[in-house]
Every structure is written in C-alpha cells, then in structure tokens.
Length: 186
Ligand code: ADP
Image (cartoon, rainbow, N blue to C red):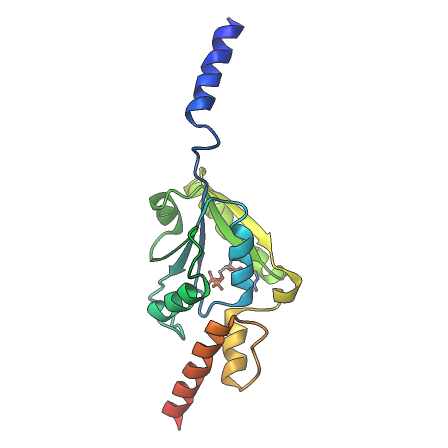
C-alpha cells in the first residue's frame, strides 16, 4: 500500500519537476518615473523568480508626469539586455492580470510604515480574490528608503538635485520634462 502511494507521489513530483516549473513574478507599479528604489526591487526580485513581469499600471484616473510610453522607454533603457525582465502595461484588476501572465507571485516593495497599511490591505484583498497568487514584499534598501516617484518629481520641479535617487536614464527625462513644463508656464 505504502509503496503504491509513494510511487504515485513520485510520479506527480516528476511530472512537475522543479526544473520545469517556471516561477513568474509580477511587479506592478506606476513607475512615474522609475527610481533607484524600483531598480533595486527589480534586481533583487530576479533572484526569486525565473521571469519578472514589470507592469506599468495604466490608471486613467491619475494624471501622471510621464506617459505610459515614456515610462516604458525609461524601463527599456535601464534594462536593455535582461532577458528575464518582461516589460508590459495593464489596466484593470491586478489579480486578473496576474492570472493572465501566469504569475505565481506579486512582488511589492515596502518602505516606511506609511506603505504598510495600504500594502497589507491590497495583499489581503488580492489573496481573497486569488488565493493561488502569493504577494511577496521586499524591504526597501536603506539608500532608497525615503525615495518615492512623487518626492523625486516634486524636488525636480523645485530645482533640487535628484541624481542620487533615479537612474541616469530617468534623470535625463526628468530634466527635459521639467524644462518643458517650465517653458509652458513662462
Ligand atoms: P504605486 O502607484 O503602485 O505605488 P509605485 O511606482 O509608486 O507604484 O511603486 C510600485 C512598487 O514599488 C510599490 O510596491 C512600492 O512600494 C515600491 N517602491 C516604490 N519606491 C520604492 C523604494 N524606494 N524602495 C522600495 N520599493 C519601492
């Protein structure tokens, strides 16, 4: 009896062997624009999965500084050769998109306590909606703990130096965008 059960289990395990199982993680965000905090989460997230789907959330109710296309270009410039990073955009319910891309996990970054409340609500709701998709949190690295896209935009608009908080590709776009916006106002 035991022997039969064991071999059935073994067959099952062999069918979905660790080699065949692709671990796909989905990292959703506004990325308006990409910061060093995001880059760090992407780099560390890659050690946890085979493929990381970085998805720009298209939210028609938000007024972003950068269009989805511009945000995508920055991401492409920063990760040009990383085969395991797939760049996409989506709108609608996150768990539906996670199922569409066959993600096993949703990846999120956690900064100060302020992130915790929102993120825990989201993770619990998403678990209720899609129990098979686990939400995984990576703690922000100390150097990016206070970096947010919102703050970076505010400081850039006020003429502050944000070169330590964003990758050079995003810095170039931000500088150009600030000039463009200030030109319009003048
Ligand atoms: P959203 O609009 O969904 O908050 P963001 O682009 O601001 O999108 O962030 C996407 C994800 O990246 C979120 O999980 C956020 O907590 C995380 N994140 C943002 N900035 C940082 C950072 N500096 N360090 C670590 N994680 C971050």
